[in-house]
Structure formats: C-alpha cells, structure tokens
Amino acid sequence: MPAGEFRYPSSPPPETEDDEGWVWNQIKEEARCDAESEPALASYLYSTILSHSSLERSLSFHLGNKLCSSTLLSTLLYDLFLNAFSTDPSLRSAAVADLRAARVRDPACVSFSHCLLNYKGFLACQAHRVAHKLWNQSRRPLALALHSRISDVFAVDIHPAARIGKGILFDHATGVVVGETAVIGNNVSILHHVTLGGTGKAGGDRHPKIGDGVLIGAGATILGNVRIGEGAKIGAGSVVLINVPPRTTAVGNPARLVGGKEKPAKHEDVPGESMDHTSGISEWSDYII
Image 1 (tube, rainbow, N blue to C red):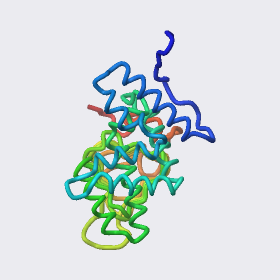
Image 2 (image 1 turned 30 degrees about the horizontal axis):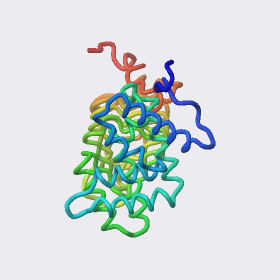
Image 3 (image 1 turned 135 degrees about the vertical axis):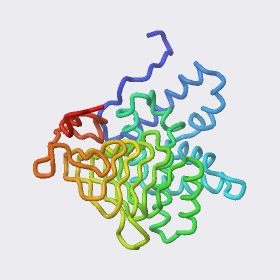
Image 4 (image 1 turned 90 degrees about the horizontal axis):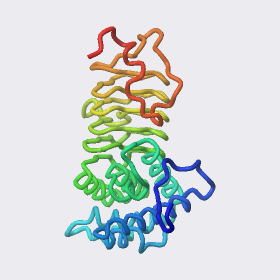
C-alpha cells in the first residue's frame, strides 16, 4: 500500500473496552481519506467530522444542522444534543453499537463515516434517543417538537416514548412508524415501511414488543400489544396480529409460521444480525413464486 493511502477495512474488529475511541478514530481516518480523494467534499467533511474533537460533538453538530428550521435553530439543537450525549454514556455506546450494526450488516455501508453522515435511519435513531430522554425528563413539548422534525426530515416516525435498544439497524428507514408503547430490543434490524402500530384508538399498552435479534422485512406490519420472540424473523409484507415464538419465521397476510403452528421450524442463527431474509421460506409452501 503506498505511503499515506488509507483503505477501509472489510469489517470492524471485535468490540473493545475503548470501542467508542476506536470507532471515532476510524471515522476521522475515513473522512481524511475521502477529503483527499474528493476535494469537493473537503469543506463538508471538515465541518462535520474533522473539526470536532469527539464523536458526540460531530454527531450533535450534524444532527443540529439536519433538523434545524427557521424557528428551531441549529445552535439550540447542537447544545441540546451535545448535553445529552456528553452526560449520558449509554447514548454514546448505543450510537457506536448502531454504527457497527450498519457497517457489519449492510453491504452497502462502505464506512463508519458514510453511516454517520448519510444513513437517515441511524441519524433518526440517535435523535429519537435524545427525544426519549427528554420525554422521560418530563420535557414533553420539546420531545414532541423534536419528534416532529425527525419525521419531517428523515421520514421516520418514532414516538418519543418508544423504547429502543442498541445495535439497531433501520435499513433504508423510509416510512418506518413506531408507536408510543412499542419496545425494540437489542441487535434488531428493521427495513423500510415497517409499522409497529396499535389496533385502534384504545389507550394503554397497545404496541408491539420486539425481542433481541429480530429481523423485520420491508413493508411488514405488526399491530397491537403482541410479542415477537427473540431471534424471530418477520417476512417482507407480512401482517402480524398475534405473538410470534422465538427463533421462528412468520410470513404472509395474515402471517403464518413456517413449519406450522404446532411445530414451527426454528433457525439457529440470529436473523437480526445475519440479515437472512429467505432461508426456510420454501418450507411454508410447496409453491414459491
């Protein structure tokens, strides 16, 4: 490799005690490489990444500029995000886990810096976590205002009361809707136009609970206070109205379990991490288009 040339690694190394520091250093190296190879982006990369001393400062600056409006100023949002990320280590560790999730699971994600700057699913999730923190601090008008801007800018509608784990991949993300009492576990992957919604106008605990390691395909709709078990897979376009057992696959409208209700087929992998959308589907029917 010629001196001074930087190449993106094919995949990130295992998590370390200083994972945040390693990822931030990698982001800066990637940004330097991109600025050298594409001078038209040099100023943009300097202002969003290279001029900042930490991941939380870079992320706060970028979110502030993305979500600002004529009446919701970027400086106000920058201070809001920076205060949240700086004082809450769990927000920073979740952001790093989400960056890793995109880098490892999405073959289109060429670098951490690409995810940080351009993945609206990642950005919407980080902004939601701050809105959720505000909601829990009883700063609900501000949480709802932030929620509205996230929906306007990123086309991702996550109620600020919804609880989301870490290692989350919102792949493509357009049209994702997550209701107020929904819960999403760790290492979950969700594609575009997925709805985690209620079944009517009744209040209370009325939205889905998604276990760790779940994969939800594009256009799937899960309604009501139902539980999607750990490591389950929901096929694209499915409509789920009842609980789905762990490590099983539900497909169709209405969704049915691959292998049947009495003895559903179970898989060994974690689909939320493997991103395997199709294995086992042929067991559901003897005719696959």
